[in-house]
Image 1 (spheres, rainbow, N blue to C red):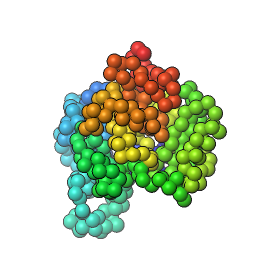
Image 2 (cartoon, rainbow, N blue to C red):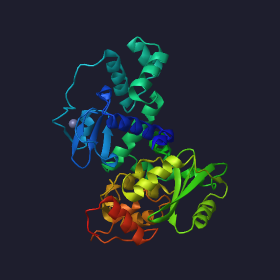
Image 3 (cartoon, rainbow, N blue to C red):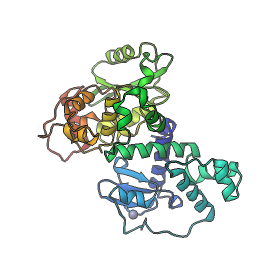
Image 4 (tube, helix red, strand yellow):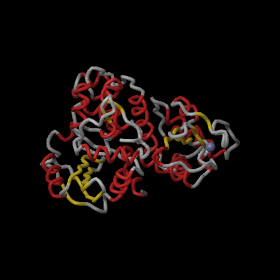
Length: 360
Ligand SMILES: [Zn+2]
């Protein structure tokens, strides 16, 4: 999973934080807390409690954010209590808090001046302490804000979306681009874009994944690799589609884990084409935790379009990226499985892998 770091700010930061949790690295205390979905508790990176499964972990920059999301502080490690820290680390933590402000316009040079450091020193210290460069941290924070707004069903971007691409520029500039969702870019059939792909054999069949430099643009499940690759090629007729097993090894590892229920592919950056409505549905699907399901009408309500249940089902059926957009986690309100672009048996297998205890 090491290579996921290359995929951009969000995953780079998640990866650095997960490494600290794995190593129980108390030096990262104050920089973030981690919360465990299965227990509802959040901890300091150095907590001595049993290590959680990675896919159950959610990261927050501050204890306050974790509590807003409904988690309570671990009694064992007291993540909500401040402790004395190395002043240099405390300064970097202060820089993090600045960068987390929604309308931050703090240039690193100005932040450095306030600390009495050179900009070069600030950048180096930041990377050492936080594990990612300032730019990656900023991108991750911005993406996280959009994601958590979508998760609460807040209609942050409704107006822009309803008006279509032409006037949704603000959203794409302030949110979606950093999530890797750039629907309009492929209207020309991916002209001039290089797309690498790889394939793997899994318990649900052959999986082919394709990725641009920005993120995953297709994940297909089937029985014959050649047919799946041809399907992707037909969707991006102007793109340069080429096999790149080495380059996509990181993505392949995550997807193979996701098929087994050991990993969650929704953390992978995406670069997808879709209508504004589809993109909104796909983002909502990415917020459904592994092991959970939602009904089509719950998703419709969540995106602020409660009457658009059939359109939500249509967006699920049009999902270009299996697993990465977990449309298999959407079922009918009566609990029956509903449809799945890659077959109901596959949907059932994925749900069973993610929640082994649940009868199907
Ligand atoms: Zn703890």
